[in-house]
Length: 322
Ligand SMILES: Cc1cc2nc3c(=O)[nH]c(=O)nc-3n(C[C@H](O)[C@H](O)[C@H](O)COP(=O)(O)OP(=O)(O)OC[C@H]3O[C@@H](n4cnc5c(N)ncnc54)[C@H](O)[C@@H]3O)c2cc1C
Image (cartoon, rainbow, N blue to C red; front, side, top):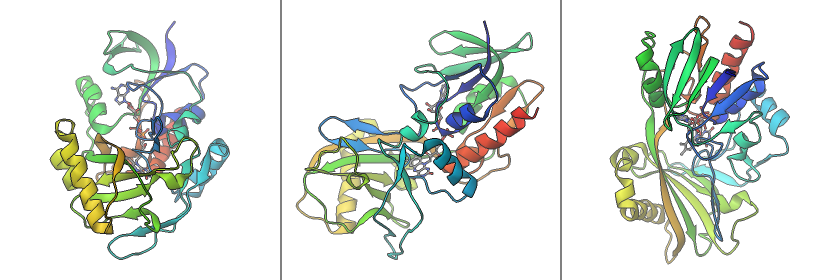
């Protein structure tokens, strides 16, 4: 039997769609091992939890705030503490939601349908008024309607062979995120620091201050996100130069915050080839009702989870009314 709707990707846009699309017969496929996409959490035994993608959600649209509280009330909490911009010490005082058990629970707890993991879509063909999906593991699936919620470059790979005369502006930018457990508190008064002019760092977040079960209380956990220039330089090669890249980021953090005599008990780094898109937002979603093909994701509206939600919500409304 063929499915009615198949969604590709199990990130926040997909989880939003799974709640809004009127279809009992919905399936989600993702190439990863679990839900979340860029809303991801790494759990390290005896160390703790690192949100190495999405740090927090700060709703600016009241409907989005309502959606979060309506659908995720028991899974989220506010991240409290001081947040500031390094260069001018300005406070960042917006409300910041995090997942109680890690930021991947934003997606895990929102998804309302079955997901098959380790399923990478590599091809899409139109056959007898249906879609034929081809996965990397040679598996195939048929369905009436397909929705792609995958980052721009990955999406283009799938849709270009369809010759739909569909072009999207801009490209997604990389990011490198270091996860570090320090062997003692750093005694920094802020739990989140934004670097606006630094050539190596753009953000530092104190993961221990998220107060989650599973964090080793004898250590202080931080995530450091790289600047765009630094990511452009190292994202393609960081796997072969892990120690060097980590050391550059950690030493920069120590220098900026004047930290001395602290050692690390754990350190690792994750590279996001397609982290953010910061310009070129002409269509907020794509829906072609003649061939039942939809596309949505943060990159169609902006660079944040709220943009993934906006794009998915607009697409779901369009599909439900067509
Ligand atoms: C380092 C970092 C920090 C961030 N910090 C914040 C923040 O603090 N606040 C905020 O609001 N936003 C932040 N963001 C952005 C936020 O994470 C994204 O806006 C949001 O997660 C995007 O959701 P999505 O569903 O559109 O895409 P994704 O989460 O990328 O989901 C797409 C899914 O598609 C899957 N996929 C891709 N190709 C295929 C394929 N061919 N076949 C099958 N599956 C495929 C992927 O595995 C992935 O799970 C951050 C992002 C990064 C990288």
